[in-house]
Length: 536
Image (tube, rainbow, N blue to C red; front, side, top):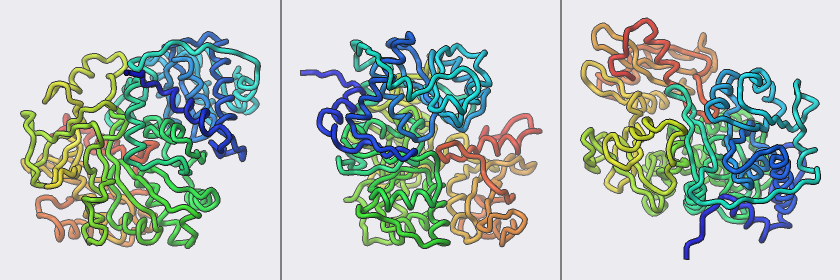
């Protein structure tokens, strides 16, 4: 038989079997069981219904990782409306663009971020405004807690697994964000893949450091809920608080950007705090892979099990994972290099690394190609952008999503990303991987963070330039100099790959999920040029 795959099934299952079990540890100190969480979800769905929200309407959520985000998301989806989470690090102009682009009818916004919406309120189509503390927000906003406690009813509409149920906006590292449409089916199957490959069980306590808005927290708003596990919520990323919560709440699992692991490493070195409660810990990182030294610290000092995830907003995000215990010898010196790879495809997913003609490159760990993917977790398409959607799925191979990520593949089929197409530096006709240069510079003791981009060169067209956050934290007293770092790359790489220039900075521009926004650095370097040679 065929049963429709619906995202509402995840909370339904938790309420049915885990109703008396703790579901959420709130940032405000409250603790909710799955029965209590479900009642609040129903209350929000009823309130939205009373205000005219129907199946297919877009409802935005602007919130850090609190219980309100979970309640709002599931309340929206119980109506068959389209959950549209927003990146809280954006500015009012960005919100105006997204709310207008998606045609958002209602919004729930955390009191700390509601002023950014209030600033563009008269410019957007949104008519219903809800916050979790109306007394802290200027303007006419309804209070979330009052709404969920009011008497109200709603009817869950007929829903089909191919209905769009969420729109996730891309992080905008290469321009205006695009609305990624995901259906009940894509979300459900992705969450099942996450559950399997992250080994999620009903006794997991999951710590939210990864933003819930980011591809629905990589699908964990579904997976953790559906398994009856516990959500430990946060309002932001703070190293001291993370270690405290891990011990206090016996956390067993978290997902994060590599920058969070760097933060934890630095805090631990200065404070030597406990790194585990009663449960063994595992952590998944994504984005640019962390340096091997960080993975070593995570595993050998913290005692956590590390795995790397590779993905994209368009794919839910899971495309590849290094959670491959039989392919990695835990006693081998190579294990950290293997664990930082983007790994192999999850179940039901096909990956092809192809050349410009769409032919698969050999598994020789040398030949670079673009990663293409197809699987049930891949998006329906971009919201109201059919031409962009068509190109994304058909440029080199018909029916495959084109990631623009460039990788090599080893003899076991494990991916290792070399760069994004726009991050390859073409210097004197030679292709240079910025990631390879960054990995090399991370091995220098005085380098805390680094991003390498192409800079103009009258001799070579473009040449690698490194922006370095020094370990000292002070770009005026970096503990090294540019010449030393240039020499360091020459010692470890082919001469033509070495960086030509180093600039010390206090911080690198990043998205809320920790991705370095290289396009900002590239724009700075090429601002006075007609075009970038490699269009990098």
